[in-house]
Amino acid sequence: MGDSAERTPGRGVLEGAFQVLDVLAAERGGAGLSEVARAGGLPKATAYRLLEQLVGIGAVQRHGQRYFVGKVLARLGQAWQPHPQLREAAVGPVRTLASLSATAVAVTVLHGDRVRIVAATRGALGELPQMRADSDLASRTAAGRVLLAAQPGADPPDGYSQAEWRRIRDGLRHEATIAVDHQEAVPGICCVAAPVVLPRQQGIASISALVISRTVPKQLPDLLVRAAAEVTRNLGVR
Image (tube, rainbow, N blue to C red; front, side, top):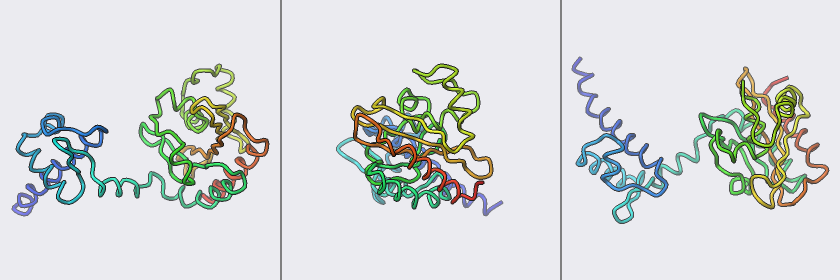
C-alpha cells in the first residue's frame, strides 16, 4: 500500500504531461497557456509547470506566448510504426516498384480514424496527402478507396455507383484488383493502388504508385499488382 502511494505523484505528473501533449498534438497552430490548461482540464499553474518542464527536455517548444510539439516528440512520432511487420515486408517491393516505374510509392493502412503511411519512397511522403479515413479526400485517392472498400458495410464514395463499389469490394478477394485516381485528389498527379492482404485476418493494406502525369502509364497497373503480390508473399499470406 505504501509503495502504491509513493508511485502516485509520479503517475500524476506523467498523466498531466500526456494531457498537455495531447492538447498540443491537436493544435497545429500551437496553444497558449490558458488554452492548454482549459483543454487539458488542468490548473493554470500546473499546466505552466508541465509545459516548462517539457520545453526543458525538447518535447515541447515555445515561440512567444504559444507552445508547440517539440522536435524530440516529433522524432519519436516519426519512428513509430502502425504495422512493423508490414513495413519489413514492403520495403523491398516498394523500392523495386519505384525503380521500375519511376513513380513515388507508398504502403498505407487504416489505423484508427487515419490513413497512415507504413513504408514509402521519399517522394511519396510529400505527395501523398495525410488524411482522415472519413474525409472526402480519402475517398478521392486510389489508396483511400482500396482501404475504405475493405471495411464492412462501407458506403460507396462520391462518383461510384453501388454496383461499381460492390465490384471493387468483390475484387479485393483477387490479387489483380486496382483502383485508379485520375488527378482527383491532387491536380497533375495520377495514382494507382492495389490491396495487400494482411496476415491473421488483420484486414487490407494498400500499395499505391503516384506519377506526375495526366494519364496512367500503361505498364504501371501490372507492375503494381506484382508488387502487391510480393508484399503479400513476404507477409506469409497465401
